[in-house]
Amino acid sequence: MTIHRFPFLNKTRRDTPAAGMIREECDLLAGPATRGELGTALAAIVLLYTPADIRQMQRNFKTKIRDIDEDYREPLYLKVTEHLLGTYQQIRLLSQQGAFSRMDIPVSPENSRYWAMVAAACSARAEEKGPRLAFLNYLLAGFCIFVLDEPAHPVGTPFPGGDTVECEDGIYYCPVREKSSEIDAGFCGFCPALQTPEAGYISRGASEHRKQAYIDHYFHNYNG
Image 1 (cartoon, rainbow, N blue to C red):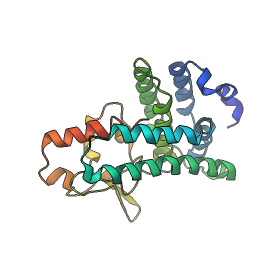
Image 2: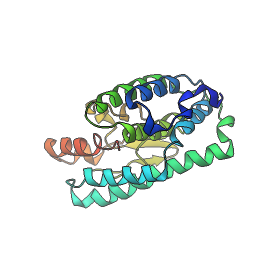
Image 3: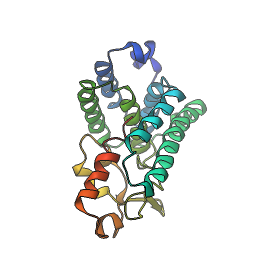
């Protein structure tokens, strides 16, 4: 895969018609055959963004979760914002090292469906507000899921009831994995994590209203 497959690299992101350009990029991201090819394609797009964009995402996320229970609001903010910057930096480092050229494992068949979902979600978002940072979040999540085979929400992400995303013997567990079907335009349905056995979030008697409020505030707003 060469950089010439990506004509949008000759344009600055702020100068392009957002939704149409994002759809073109998603079509291209659906095509790679290996994780390395996908990583190369993702890096070419992600690195058009800057650390300032990541900082803006962090500020946006802090604002959007301000009504979440204070017991886990700050741990959630710290974990998620750390992960956003860390993933961006990891993509840049792997690209600089040429590491993607050595990743020859076939990409998941779900990759193409993921980018179709992203294109639709960003197109809908463009009708209300710019999808630029939302797209960056989907790019970072797609990298974690399809290149690294890791959850988009990092290990240690807290949830009501005291549970967190965990990794045991190389297997990831998420306490709300089975809630993925309730999340509109979310990436949780593509996550490689398994449902945490006997998760407190599911079994400890939190009200349905509290559970749904958490989903609304966290999952729907974790998009830049």
